Image 1: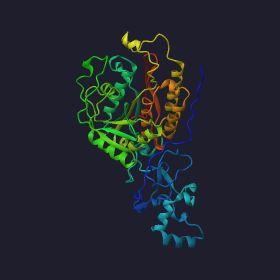
Image 2 (image 1 turned 180 degrees about the horizontal axis):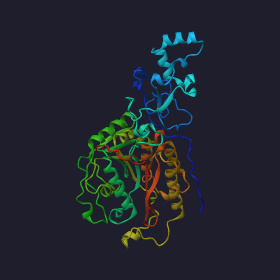
Image 3 (image 1 turned 90 degrees about the vertical axis):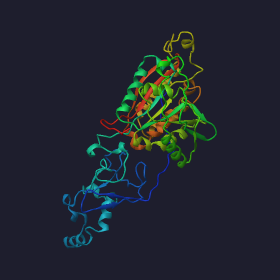
Image 4 (image 1 turned 60 degrees about the vertical axis):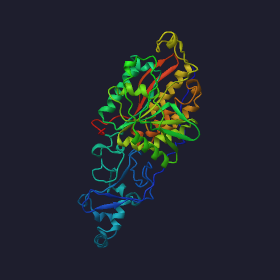
Length: 438
């Protein structure tokens, strides 16, 4: 068996550009009531395009920060001005409290003052204690400490498998229950899901807007496990998704007739057995462009900051031309196999795990998952693309530079029909004690 090394490319997934007109941030110094952040220094991550690039060299690039003023008593303003003492006294009297000195505070890196210790740096917002600008939770350390982070909700790429995964005990079923309970415990506002069984032609995508969707029967699973489960479509969030995607240039519309199929329904029954949370289902596009679908996740990423859980429902290894249906049709045993999975499938499954676990969140995740579609065994593992593309969707939702703090894990796995790999992958983690109020 040959070994394939997956290397991320240098091309990043295109992402929308957010522009602004500048804003005034609060200050923790009573003598400096505000400071104006200029637009012509780029932000590190492009989230707003307003913050100046003021990272000291010993801080990770995924953290956003603006200059933080200490109270005037902490440092000597006289040292900000060079020259003889009389000149310094005159200039200090003339300029203290005026806009020019505030300009000095705002641009310490241009003056080189941060190298002399006259300014300290902290992550912008310090959990929004001193600043009024809204900051993504994943970039805000508790108490300003860089080693303690508040995380956005994780994202999941879940192999939904055959319907029998809902009816048979397995580590995968246990993992679905676990991550569902975690989402409930943290009060998610809802679920935004892209599944493998719904794709739209041309250059379009659709969002499920059926107020009462019927469900596809869950074959080979006792009806008592699913027939009384009531879908809960989130039409309000669905319309928000349509508006966000339309504003970003996507050709998108609602679909008022779409039903919930086996890429959506069994997962939700397993994760949320007592009650279905509000769910928004987004379609694939039939061109199956990895960058296109990653950008969908990027555009909808702000919903994660509000407490929405993103799920890509597909398959780690899913090639119906290689699965052996006799194990279900003849033996009613989806886990049975007379020999191991094909080595090509195992090789690709390992590469998929490596890309997610070794990269975690951030731009490298998007690049790595897109590159895997050129893997020499990709077509062995995926006879068609639709069960892989949802991984790009969740990668886009956790693919910004500030998401690099998120870690990827292999949560659970099983194999069905000998060659169908049901890998369950999660990127990110919940913040301890965080509740989104859902």
